[in-house]
Image 1 (cartoon, rainbow, N blue to C red):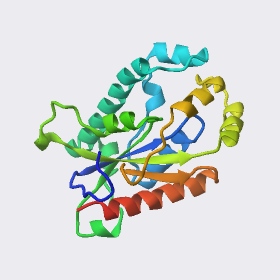
Image 2: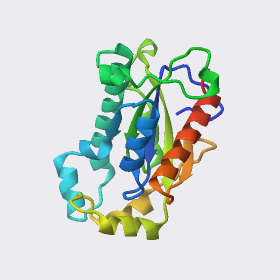
Image 3: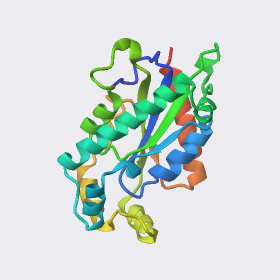
Length: 219
C-alpha cells in the first residue's frame, strides 16, 4: 500500500469508503462517485456469498475464512472496473474521466472507481490495495486511497435501528467495532472523516479531502 509521501502514476484512482455497518459507506460512496465525475460505484455488500448473508442475518459474526473469498471478489470487481475505464468499452464508465486537483491541470486525465467496503482490518486494506500477483507491471491500472467514516457507537445504533430490509443484524455491531482497526494515516493511504454530519456535508468533505490528497500524491 502506498503511504502519503509516495506519488502515483497509475491512471486510475480507486477510492474505498470504509467503516463499520451504519457509518454511511453506500450513501456517501455512491454520492462521492457522482462528485468524482460520475465514476462507477461498487457496493461490496452486494458481493457477499449467500452463506455470509445468512450468517449475518442470524447475528453470527463473520470470520476471516468468510471474509477472504469475499474480499477477493471485491478486488476482482475493482480491477474489472478500472480496466473498463481504460479500455473505454463502456460509455457510461468512459464519462467518469475527470480532472481533480490543481496538480492535474497539465492535461493528465485521472479516472476514478469508488467502492463502499467495510475494510475493517489493515490486512484487508492491504489486500484490496494490491493487484493480482499474476499481474505484470505493465498491466497495473490503479492506486488506492481509503476514506474512513468515523461515527460514534451511539449514532451507529440509531442508524441501524431505523434500517429496514437489510441483512445486517444490529447485534453484530459490537463484533465489528472489536474487529475494526482504524487506518493510521501516517502509514496507510487513508483519510479519516467525521461521519456524523448531514450526508451532503460528509460527501462534500470527502470530495475535497480526496481531491487534495490525490493532488498532493500524483505525478
